[in-house]
Image (cartoon, rainbow, N blue to C red; front, side, top):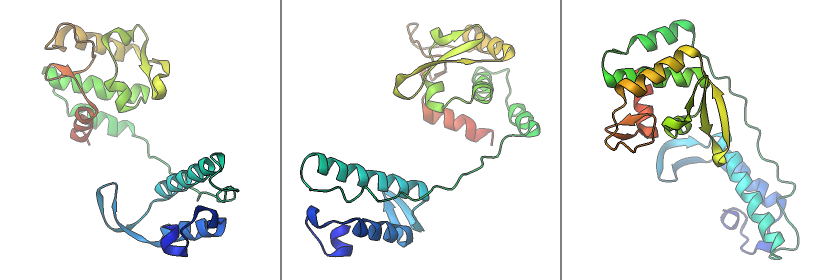
Length: 203
């Protein structure tokens, strides 16, 4: 991009104002594809643009460390601010309507009911919920492995705990008795896509 916008082709020629020019271009240029995903001539989001700037800074820092350039032109390149987004919380009425959609007399619906309750109760990521094993369930908490396999204990409401145990002993039917996954779909570990399907059904 620097070569195309600024007519320079050597790393040593790149200065901070060239990089700023690239950032300005990305702020206003409409896009059609990003990582194979098609857009209808949208603008890059501030979050995406900030990520691109971080990549630029990391690249030139590496070039400087490897003596490919005598100075790092990205040192004074400032990433655009990302506006703070307020995520609306579910109201009590929203939660009641979501939970009322489940016919908990069926195994799949009971599992989905427990999944939604656990997500609401703990706020864990979908990937963390998918990664739960039976051995991670304890009285009063579940053991969660987050990013970087960092382990933490998430407290759970006693009623949610009772429902998890009921699911485990009555409705959980793994194809392989040695299966460790807590939440099962078609006999094996439920994946993120499966959890997303559950959440879409209650929206």
